[in-house]
Length: 195
Image (cartoon, rainbow, N blue to C red; front, side, top):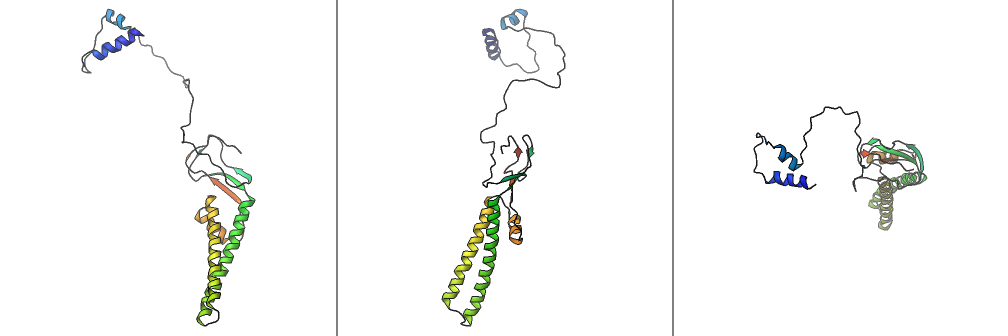
């Protein structure tokens, strides 16, 4: 070990030599530096090279994907080792709670449309003194409460990963679709699936 250190120190202490120049060491200098010269042998590598080591995930480089709804697994769409893109479907869950959220949103949406129609009719009746200002105020509060209930349902669906198109589909449909698709929040590779 001391010979290698001395050789390194000797090389570092030498004046800088241009790359095109060659350094010649006498056999005695080679022996003092611990340099051993051997003829070059040509060998081929196999298809595999064995190395010792361990693959480690970088802290913060992994994302755990969980559903905030309980449900029954309908379809597992990925397996460990699969590459996924951001937004790609990972699993589909059948959830009674999602069924309830969608049903409540449809009921609230219908109530909102009715409250808006009653409010508009109330404004027209107020102009001809068909109702009082108090009645119109009541209708305005009912319409506001109905609109807030719809916004609450939409917010719940957004928190579950629904996009605008999916929310519009729920609002335009009379059929409930209680299957939640859990999507990849980022691109990457699936490391583990724990169901």
